[in-house]
Every structure is written in C-alpha cells, then in structure tokens.
Length: 204
Length: 330
Image (cartoon, rainbow over all chains, first blue to last red; front, side, top):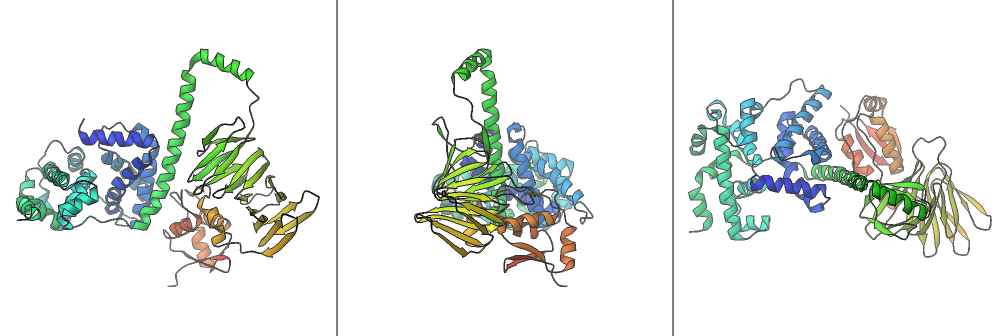
C-alpha cells in the first residue's frame, strides 16, 4: 500500500471514530475537487453542481464504513458522483443532452483512475488548447490535494516557497521537498494520461 | 540567484503547462459553507448510529454468561425508567444527568428517561422531541424531564413548538418557579430571569396557571412576565426577528427531498414566525409546480429559504410579518 493510500484509509478511520479534525480535512480536501468534477458534466450549472456534490457527499458519509481503499478516495467519490449526475439529469428534463467529457471515455478514464500503467493516447493531437488546459486541471485534481494546491500556488499564482510552507504549515525545506515530489507526481500523471504525447505537451 | 528562479529554470515544462492551464475554478464560499453544514450534520448522524451499533454488538458478544449476569443484575436494580423524549439535534454540546446520578455528554438520537436532567453550556443548544412536541433549549439552560407530558425548567430558556398542522396537539406542561405553562396549540418561549419568569407567545395561545389558582391566557404576540411576588405584566412582542434567532439555529431537520415547494414554504414560515403569501397567482402556480430534491440539513430556516429559492425562478422578501414569494417581472 502506498503512503497516500494509507493516509486516506487512516483519514476514513478517524472520521468514522468521530474526529472533528478529520472531517475538516476531508471536506477541505475533496469538496472543491468534486465540485470541479461535477460542474462541466452539468453544463456548468453551479446550482446543479452544488446539489449533485451535496448528494454525493451525503452518500459517501453513509457508505464510508464500506470504503476499503481499493481505489483512491477521490476516485471512489467520483464514482458516486457520476451516478448522481446521471440521476440528476434524468430528474431534470431541462437538460436535453448529457455532457460527455473526454475523460469520460473508457480508456482515458481508466488511465486517470489508475495512474499506474502508461498507455498511448494522443489527446494532444486531437484536442484544442482550451480542452488541454481543462485536462491539465483535471490531472491536478487527481493528485493528492497538497500536491495539486502547492503546484497551483507556485506556478499559477506565483507564490514563493516560503508562502507555500506557511499555507501548508511546514518549513522552507519541507515545502521545497513537497514541491519536488508534486512535480514528479504531476509529470508521472501526465505520462499516464497522455502516454507518449506527454513529452510533446510538456515541451510545446 | 534566488530559489524561485532556480526552480523555474529547472522545471520550465511544469511552469509553462500550469500557466497555460490557468487556475482551477473554485466553488463560491457561501455555497461551500452551506454544503459543509449539511454534510457535517450527516457525518454526525452516521457516527452516532455507528456508535450505537457498536455498543449493541459488544453487548451481544458478551455472551450467555453475561446475559445471565445481566438478568441477575436487573433483578437487583431499581425499575427501568420510562423513555419520555429523544434528542433531535445539538449544537455545541451539553450533558444528561440521569436519575442514577450518571453524567454524560448528550448525543443525537439519544433516548431520554423520566428524571433525566438536560443541561446546555455557554455555547450549546439542543432540540428534543416529546411525543409530537418539539422542545428546544437555549444556551446555559437546564430542564428536568418528569414524564412524557411534563418537564421542569430550572434555568435559562426553552421554546415549545406543538407542531405544524396538528389538529389535536400533544399535551405538554412546563413547570416554572412561578407556575405551570400549558399550550393550546402553539409556539412559545419560557425564559427564567432574575426578576421572574417570562413567557413569549409566538403562535396560538398558552395558559399560565399560578400555584394559588389564578389562570391567565396569553395570545400570539403577547409577552407575560410573572414577577417573584406573583404580579403579572402583559405587553406585546414581535413574533419574528432577532429575539427568536436562537430557535432557528437548533431547528430539527425537515426532509425536503421529493416534497412540493409549498410544503417547504409552509414549514419555513412556521419556523420564522411569518405568514407566507404569494405576490401573484402566477408565483403561486410556479411554486405549486416545483418538487424539491436534496437536503437542507444543518441550515437555519432563513438560510434554507434562501438556498431552496435560489434553485428556482422565485424570490422572497420579508416585510410586515410576511414572507412574500415573487416571480421576476418579464
């Protein structure tokens, strides 16, 4: 079992034991990512995304004792969320078409969910810059929350290592080390999702 | 050369890609707060249910020998007291002092027995159900449950709601140092003050009985103050507003999933002490056509009203004791 998987299982155990700090860590770590997962699948309707995410998290709370760590916690939440999206769209006839995202294709979903065995998938050559940007943001969301946040703070918001350390409650050296691990994880995730095209994308 | 420059030069690929992708969108803070409150309430319920199950499993695992011992102990123990109420919702915590002199923090769905004393702390409040009646305790308050139809307030304040649409409301007597309060289908607050006992009637009517036989009926919008020497002062009081805000913070849950919008509006009006009116027949027809999904768990009635209406074309304004439901003009 990886460190991340062990940490996620420990978080679930602490929540089931009623530890308030574990609930806060869970909500802070997953709510925004789940909202971003639901939003594009609901025609960017913010209220619909809120309803679906609330229903997803409610079900997750009720089934938390069944979580065995076979999939990453976020992947498990996304599986519940996908079903909630379908139910929502069925119940609200105003959506005439279900939104199907690139990452909802079977092969790409398997790559994103597993992040283990790289596959050939030439997304870069088939999709535009905007779609590629969205895919990169999706990859960020699939990393452990601290990695995704640290990379966004550093490279999108331009924060210093010191500031990132303060935000995460760790020292300068630990923040640098975390950023290095985050970059490795990000590159590895890109390889998994984009296969051989990952190098082209990074160097574009 | 600074660390930042060094890192960017080493990791230009990551830098370029993330800058191109841009920031990830964030959900609105208000939405996050509302969902957090709802999920937190669900989590607390799950944890409480799990603890109860675990307790039962441990009890079963104790085996037949323990059962025999328990039977023997039950024969030696005083008679089991009657369940008179259960806890529906808590904020900030508090304690139950049982008739067997055990003191423990109270939990959601806990059963309460005759003789139990329920107390809230400086940041706590609790909502309990006695038959069909909702009783809510403000902070720094204490009551003793004497039977399924009677309780005694010994400090602080409580609020009684005999229910929405109850043709024959359940009986509940509230004993105070000044006398007994009995509702006649209503919502009211009893608060113990240094100078005496104050009763505020929000809806319906109450009857106050003094120890020496005098009786007073208080109507909706009336405040009665019974002083230590038995003198009674009556004056009018607002039926909604800040004085009633604590009641909404500990409101028992109302399941909206698959319910028509007008049912929710009726509940919200009842909890806010205001009448719900529709600005036009069109707004009434629009409300009648909507069925709700989701949950308002953990939200105050005010926040729930705003959250639910935000998912529709309708809006509300509160004025002159009314909640006016409107459709935007086209």
